[in-house]
Structure formats: C-alpha cells, structure tokens
Amino acid sequence: MGQNVKEHLRLALRMMLKPLVKLLVSQGVSHGDFSEAAKDVYVEVAIRHFDKSTRVNQSRIAILTGLTRKEVKNVIDRAMRAEPHAKNFSRPSRVLAGWHSDPRFLGPYGVPLEIPYESPVDGGTPSFVDLVKTYSGDMAPRPMLKELMRIGAVVEAERKTYKVVRWDFIPEALSADLVERLGEVTQNFFSTTAKNIEKKGPEDGLFERIVFAENGVTPATVALFDEFVKKRGQDFLEELDNWLVAREKVEKHVPRTIQTGFGMYHYIESPEEKVTLRELLKERGLESQDDTS
Image 1 (tube, rainbow, N blue to C red):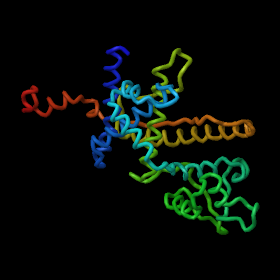
Image 2 (image 1 turned 120 degrees about the horizontal axis):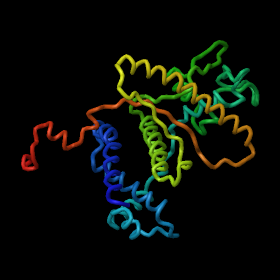
Image 3 (image 1 turned 45 degrees about the vertical axis):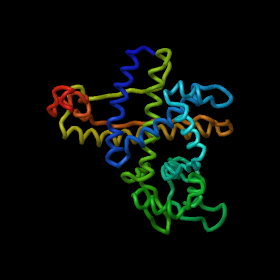
Image 4 (image 1 turned 90 degrees about the horizontal axis):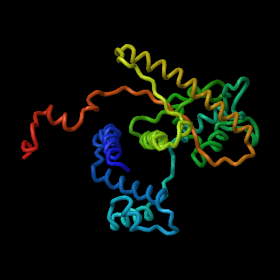
C-alpha cells in the first residue's frame, strides 16, 4: 500500500473515531479498554482473512498486525476463555417484523392481525406466544409483550387481544441492546464502504449514495427534513421488507446462507468535529511544541 493511501486511511480513521471516542469517554471506557478491543479485532481479521494455514501461525499474525507474539497469544488465550456471547439484540425487532410480514399473522391486504396472548387450543388462532416462539427463540413471551407495550409498539385491544402499532423497535438510550445495535449498524456500514473502496470495477461494490443540502439549511428545515425522512424512509423500508418476504415464498425450498439488508441514516454535521487536533491546540493558545513543557 502506498504511503499516500496509508496517510489518507489514517486521516479517515481519525474522522470515524471521533464520535465513537466521544461516546466511550462519556461512558468511562478508557484508551486501554479501546486498545485491547482493537488488538482483538486485528488478530481476528488477520486470522480470518490473511492467514490461510491449517493451524494459527502466531508469528505470522504478529507480522501482519504489528503486535508482539506475546500480545497475539494473550488475545487468543482471552478469546478461548471467553464465554459464548448470546445475542439478544433485535429480538423485539424480529418479533415486530414477523408480525408485519408472516402470512399467519396477517389479515386482508397484509394488515397485521390483532392476536390473543395465547391460543385456547393447540394449532388454533395465531397467538402472541406463537409469534415469540417463531421469531425470538427461547425468549419468554410475557416479558417480550411487556417490553413492546412499554415502548408503545403494541397496545391491548378489545376481547383480550393485542394490536401492533409500530413497525420498528428503538431500544432506550445506553441500554445493552442499543450499544449492540451501534456495533452492528456501524459494522454493516463500514463493510459496505470498505468493499466499495476495494472494488475492481464500476459495476462491482454495493449501493451507497448520499444526498445533502449543498448550501446548508435553517433549523426549521432540519426539523421538517427529519420528519420527511422518517415518514418516507419508513415507507421505503417496509416496501423492501415486503419484497424480501415475497422472495422468501418463491424460494421457500432453497437453502438460504446469506444475510443481507438495507439501512438508511440521517446525519447532521458538527463543524467542530472537522477541526484537527493541531487547529484545536492553536485555538487554545498553543503556539509551538515548546509550550507543552
């Protein structure tokens, strides 16, 4: 890799890390914690993508990552001692998506049914318990119902049935679900942009586009744009979800091994985040390196 490309990647890395590090510092996550996590990822990526040997070659991994052999060994030992991580994120999302897309829980014109908590007889009316068993594994139905009602995604209707009124699940601020969502969303976004940077030709890569106000907007327009994006964006995502459900019916006997999806986000730039560390130090009155002594 050319030195110019490496320098641009370092600059891009600094920009990507600014909002993340701001969150980490606010939550008491130290540089040491971040450094250990970075070592874990460097070792994992080196093994997964760049070391094709039958057994892990720790010396080669050290060369690839710039870590010492001892650091590589520590990462591997830590990974082997770690308990398997049970992924709980998106269970409520999967339940809501199933309620909006599974034909068993849909009425005429694809409108989600109002369903009882449980069916009085096995194999009878589709129920919330059936829905949770299908889309949330071993998660207990009662806590799931309470959580969906708490966030306003589900309401109790007449005749002891329940009605879904929201398509999406947004975890509360700084919950474990939301932090895990941060990791998954950013991983998906960075994997797309990285693939597009490395693509061989114009027809390769994945869809990645952006639209922005070239000359800026007023605060009033920001609020209106946010409202417009949420409405039209939700409509489009539901259209995509319906398309995927239709394909699932067509290919119901074909093995499915690839996870794919589509995400959208609305951003608002913070001008101060574009200021470099050097510019920030000069703003604070530092004139030269000698001033730090």
